[in-house]
Length: 212
Image (cartoon, rainbow, N blue to C red; front, side):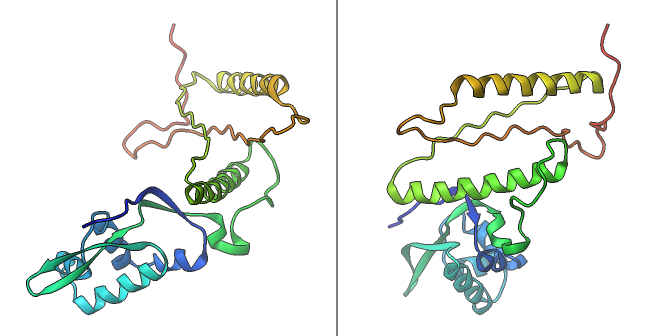
């Protein structure tokens, strides 16, 4: 009988958790154990010595990246089934300690370093909220909107950024209530960056003439 289901994404918030993943064999084990299997089953699939796989499995389980989900009989033995605690993992800023990104980057809205810092802080904050929500059986109220805009020129890009900022300022002015009793503060991060293109695709920083 199997128990438990992995989460979609887990954020590694401690140095020990992040360090436990810095090994190709352990990454292969986590990938294989997206579906339940035993350490012996993983060893068979990877063509690796069972003792070696068992060592890595114990380390991943101690780090909270694997969990026992059941048992199965194989011949005259009972194998313990394990499964990754998530299907995907992200290293959060907390795992890097004092050298992780945080609030020390100057708030320059046009600097890529500030965007990276804000994105990293968002990962850490949402991960902490998600952990608390799962512990209490609730969900975190979040909103994610993604889109792509192709600008004909730098001038069009700058005009879009200006109008977006003005619209956001107006929305905040309309809905923000610093004195609301029982209110709840939300943090919104609006970010934009060029689309990452494949090596054989057209560069994203080249503007073509606007269509006539």
